[in-house]
Structures are given as C-alpha cells and as structure tokens.
Image 1 (tube, rainbow, N blue to C red):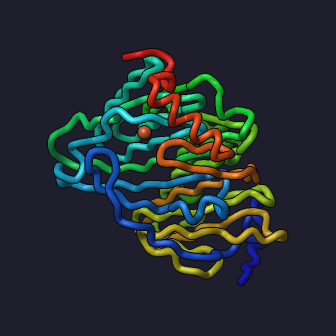
Image 2 (image 1 turned 90 degrees about the vertical axis):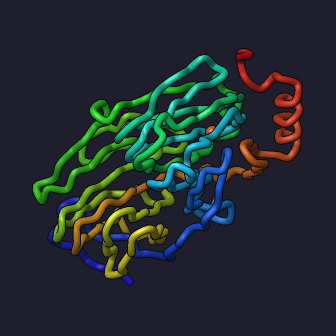
Length: 294
Ligand code: FE2
C-alpha cells in the first residue's frame, strides 16, 4: 500500500512497511540479556547493517557482567546509550565512558580487542548496538574510535516539536556526528509528540528500517508497535518515509547504501570470504589481532 502525502514538502510518497520483526531474546558477553532485533538472517536484506541489539533492563543481573575482552574485525560498531553508564577500553588504546544519550562509534577495521563494562550496580541500563559493515577494501583499515556525549550530537526540532538526534548521515540540512562514503549510513533517534509526524527523504536503493522503542507509530497506514522493527520496502517510486505518531513515541530510523558484497560472519568477525575468517581466527589466536598488547 502506498500513501500520497502532498502536505509534506520533503517526502512526496512514503515507503511502506514490508515486514514487522520482533527480534529474538538472547544473551551475549558475560550474560547480558538483550533482544537481537536485526538477526543474521536479515543481513542481506538490510545490507550494509549486520546486527541491531536492543538492551534494556532495571535488573542489574541482566547487565552487570557486561562484555569482557572480545575481538572484532571487518566492520563498525555504533553503541547508543539511552540510559546507564558503560566503560569502553580497547587494544588500540582508546578508553571512554558512554552514558545517558551518548554514542560510541568504533571502526574495528583490521582488529580490536575491547571490553564494555557497566559502571553502575543498580538502575536502568538501556541502549542499542548497531553493526555497520565495511566494504572489502576497508575491512583491514586502522581501528578508529570516537565518543560523543549527548550534548555533542547534532540535533534538530521540527515545527511540530519532533526532536531528532542525528547520529549519522543527514536530516533536513543537519549533518550527523559521523558520515561514511561507502555505506552512507543514516541513523536518527526521533522523538515524536502525540499527533506529530516526521518525514525523512531516503535515497532510492538504500535499505532502511524503523525500530520503535516507546509508544507506537504508523507508517503508510501500517501500525508499528513498540519493540518492533519495520523493514521498509524499497519501492522505486517512494522518495522517503513518513512516520506518524498517534501517541508519544520514540523510534530509530536507520538506512544505508548496500555494499552488495559477500558477507561471511564468524561471531565477532565479518569478512568477505571464509579464508579471511580463518586468517582472523589465526591472527586472534596468535595475539596479532589487536594493534597493541594490553
Ligand atoms: Fe564488542
């Protein structure tokens, strides 16, 4: 179904919802409970995105153990902390405290070993980790890392009072904290008051999804309930997405340019071929994966 939106100057025709996804309850690290929203099965459909985990709990047992030292190679991780405090340390010498509303962007490239450990023993820990693939030519780049505190992230507010944090990409002339040429990621955190709508242009051919983490929204007439990901259809004639909120809602809008390369994942390594995975495993075993020993 398509909805014509003549009233909106920025998007003439919204993409529709192709599918709603509930995600899978799982645990990772040393036993952190989380929901894997973007799973392995969706890596091709949502290329260049490899994974989205949502974590949120007020029970310390669900998060306290954190993510002790573990490796990554071949992609980028973007951690967005809605509430809570987590300390990052890695083998490239980076260290940063990620807290309420902050983002940590890490390009693992040729390899990092890092830990992500909660710095709280009670209260709510809530956030997201998104994995963004690197093109084959960049999989072995030098690792890169940056923290952005909440007040360092670009934001905009629309006339209807919709407030948007532009983590990556560009929205209404506001350039995000991070931009990437190969994958052109768009990553918006959108807070909609009841009765508001938000339109965002999307490049044709880019894969896109919306994840609702508060309230409920409607996209081209399809209700998207809380804790659901709506995969947006790639209709050639649609020039963006229009998100409408009957009740107050908070959603992530994520889109990017597909790499259309082979994806071979083995746990924390994502490469283009099995041989490159074997190489990553042997580099890790031999202590050659992190740039510097810790
Ligand atoms: Fe990690």
